[in-house]
Structure formats: structure tokens, C-alpha cells
Image 1 (cartoon, helix red, strand yellow):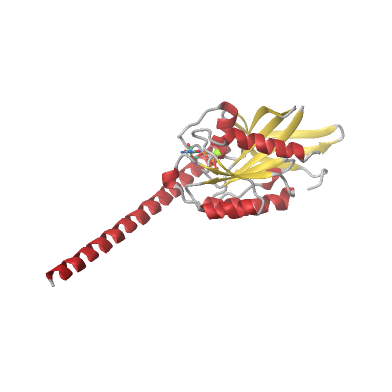
Image 2 (cartoon, rainbow over the protein chains, first blue to last red):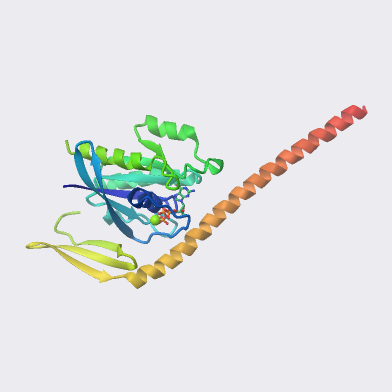
Length: 167
Length: 92
Ligand SMILES: Nc1nc2c(ncn2[C@@H]2O[C@H](COP(=O)(O)OP(=O)(O)OP(=O)(O)O)[C@@H](O)[C@H]2O)c(=O)[nH]1
Ligand SMILES: [Mg+2]
């Protein structure tokens, strides 16, 4: 069985844990329970003709007191950068974290998830900014851990990118 | 990081309410794992982090409401300014 380690990286409260819970257990909770350290979940996925065990490392978010612990990134095959569409600064944080991850783990397949797409009335992230990132080669997907929008597609897409990387 | 180094993973959640600090050291037969219970330490950090993050989220929301309020007030002032200007004009 092929195993792939995927890390969830981003500022605090952007929805990293919720996205993993939605993908692995098809559940969502409005209640916020911050993650300390790392929680690892597994989901088996069929990607084309291959079956892959995704090991999802849900990392503690960055805040003023805690920065990303690079030891968690070792051995990753790819990562999700998660930002909260209703909090613009979390996109800046995601961009700076992508540089940090690359410094530590090298160039890895990744996707930028702009989460909380179910809250358009509170949206703060400018479409032009996302187009710029897309034009520079980033894969950007809007997701909602609440409704499930874009979630399955994002995980499947990153899983297949990590498999392509093996070829 | 070389493979001969000891690795340290802090606060790894192993199951509901069970957190460990994990040391991974190279060993002649493979790897040696040392797990140190960190459940209560992680619990204390969780409680503090939860309060801190919730406070920041509250402040962010408050700032948004304040900006909206300022916007509304500015629009209202603009509107009433234009109305009194129109009144003066019609009196002329
Ligand atoms: N409306 C909405 N709320 C969401 C969504 N995703 C997460 N949330 C809420 O946002 C809050 C934070 O979600 P978490 O998944 O705990 O965020 P996190 O990134 O894991 O946070 P840390 O562990 O502190 O870094 C919770 O109250 C969730 O219910 C979403 O897609 N839509
Ligand atoms: Mg979390």
C-alpha cells in the first residue's frame, strides 16, 4: 500500500481540523477547539487505479505565541496551506508559511485552500489576489468544511499530485 | 537533518485525551521510540491557547463591526449633508 503524509498548515482557526474531520469522518462542528501539537488521521483513497493511505497531519495553527514546528514536516509528500476567506491576514500568513515549508522540506506539491466559502457576506479575500497566485502556478481552491464544498476534490487532487511526483 | 540525529515530536495526540512527546533515535536494529506522557502539559497549553485565540478572534470581529459602523455613519453624514444642501437650494 502506498502511504503519503500530508500536512495541514496555516494560521489559527482557519479550519484545518474541520477540513480533516469533514474529509475523514464527514462531520462538522461549529465549536472551536484549538489543536495543540499535532493530530494524525488516516484515510484510504482510490486515485485512478491506485489506492493510497493518506496520513493527514493536522498541525497546530500559527498564532502570536506559537510558530510552525518544522520537525512535523519531515517526510511529507505534500501539504495544504489553509487560509480563512473571512480573515484576509490569514492569506498573508499562508504565503509566508509556504516559504518556511519550502526552506525545511524542499519543493513539495501543495494546494492553497481558501476555507469558509459558505460565508460570502463576511468575505475579505480579494479575487485579484487569488488570480495572481493562480497565475504564478499555485493551485487555489475555495472550500467549506461546513458544507463540504471543494473538500473531497482538494484532497483527491493533492493525493494524485503526490503520486505523480513518484513517477 | 541527518538520519543519525535524534528527532523530537512535541505534543502528538495519540487518541482522545492522550498526548505524548516522542523521541525517535536511530538504533542498530532500526529505530528506537521513546514516548513521554505529555497529556496534562498539553491540556494546560490547550486551555491557554484556546482563551488567547478566542480573544484574538473576538477582537478581529469587533474591528470588523467598528469598520462597518464607521462606514454607515459616513454614509449617513454624506446623505444628510446632501439633503441640507438640497434644502438650501430649494429655498433659494
Ligand atoms: N462557517 C464555517 N466555519 C468553519 C469552517 N471551517 C471551520 N469553521 C469554524 O472555524 C473555527 C475554527 O476551526 P478549526 O477547524 O478548529 O480551525 P484550526 O485551523 O484547526 O484551528 P487551530 O487548531 O487553532 O489552528 C471553528 O469554530 C469551526 O467550526 C467553514 O468552512 N465554514
Ligand atoms: Mg486545529
